Image (cartoon, rainbow, N blue to C red; front, side):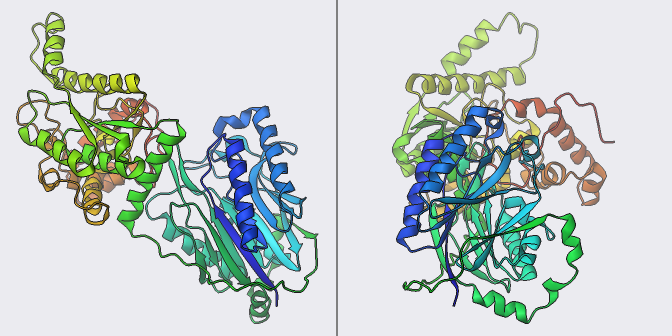
Length: 578
């Protein structure tokens, strides 16, 4: 019987850290060897990290990554290694090197280059149409990269026609809520349609706004899941595959034999013969791991934690500072920060003003106590009085308005940035997606900072995640009930609430989802049952505040369409929906 012990190394890489990424790859090769794996697959562009963006315009970067690829090849004695890197043959290519016994057997160049959403691969890479199949120990293995597997007629189909029994697909697939289920349905379909095993190795970790969720999987020729790795954790997933089952199944299924002519337009198959099958080496059979997927709120919360941890750490910071207002947004941000970095690495700063309620300060104190973080209090009244005095002449004859309100949040921004500069700690901002969408935030005030943890989290979801953290985190119930139950307010003037300016969040968030994430028109949204005047007001706020969003810090992407990475509109824009 032909057996393949396949290992998927879902590792956390850092863009540009060629030495660190390569060292990790070599370590995981040794781990795979220790488990007697025949083949180990690493994520897409594992050597460079993903996405390297305009580093790809630097020839020295390309050459250095190729040198690291050859170091990996040299360490492939006794095992087959599939590793992502950037090749420079004739142009630059998103590539996978296939190595065995210290030799480079071949290189696959990605065929389909995504150029939508967060992806800009067509900006950098050249596509190829070669679809290699490597025969190693008598097993036909096709290798392709990420987007290639999403096409029903693509390299997988060509490789299957050339005899591939196992497809090794390597990925850097960014997370958003709901993507895992969608992705696994597609992979199941590819495996069953082509009578192959499909191995899907995915990256984990955060890179700028993106988070990669791991969850590497293998599906068999019937579309059933054989293995699933953990989500948001580095792991070596090792699986035993019965390759003879593919041949036996194909005897009874004639569908893949039909109409080969359509494959000619897709790509050219190459069969690279390395070695015939030899007797199986004795080894203890494995129980294939199938980790249960985590539930939706836990998945989103994990993405926020991983994205925050990796951004702070990969940028070289150890500690963060957060302005704690006693509101739900700063409270959730602090909880995520503690779970990401540890309580000793988070400082809370309460900055009460003349408009701050007693409850806001006590809620901030209760949260800090529950989380075990240090909290310092820096009242802003003295600074506000000084600013009002300085501006009394320029403001003369004008009634107090939003300008005086925003002085308060800008003073708070200065305090946080002063602490950041003095101690070299990163400021985490606390604005949510609903606020970023409508411009309900202050430039150089509450938008000032290094990373926006919940920038892509709508307000209603902020409440759901806070309740989830209380019920499932450790320790539990760290977010005071009073914070969850209080009416949201910026507390910049007497008796202020968010709904003085915005529609209720239960109304606002669905409108924003329809307009921002789904590109629905005013008419479409009104037809969904929303008041026309309210929809017009929301659309106007979203359009008017693009200039603010361009100046906001990056934040974790958790929705299908995040501001900045996904949704890119001109700042100067006179198009209006009637």
